[in-house]
Amino acid sequence: MSDARRKADLEALERLNADYVDSVQRSDVARFEQILAPDFYCSNPDGSLVDRAAFLQQTARPVAITELRPEQVKIRLIGDFAIIHAATHYRTPDGEVRRGRYTDCWARIDGSWLAVSAHVTR
Image (cartoon, one colour):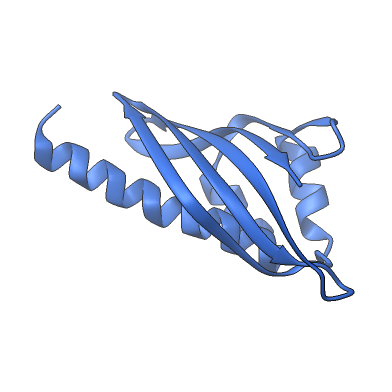
């Protein structure tokens, strides 16, 4: 992979990561419909595993947390596959500041980066 291609991929994945987190905070189902692979799965903080349809349903419900932001983002690019590890910072409805982690896996499918898997802890 050329340096220019690697740089472009990393920049695209940085934007997609920001979109993903922002879409969680805003319950943006339309954006998730664009960036999730058809066979996407997510491991939720409660231990449940949901497919794309269930993830979109849960995303449609407004979240109670605020100020969600990623920190310590590490993007590992492996050809047409990428793993994003990050910490999160957010505020609960009662004002308590908390942290969590997530790992998202992305694949280049038909020329576009799509999220294929997510794992979230809080």
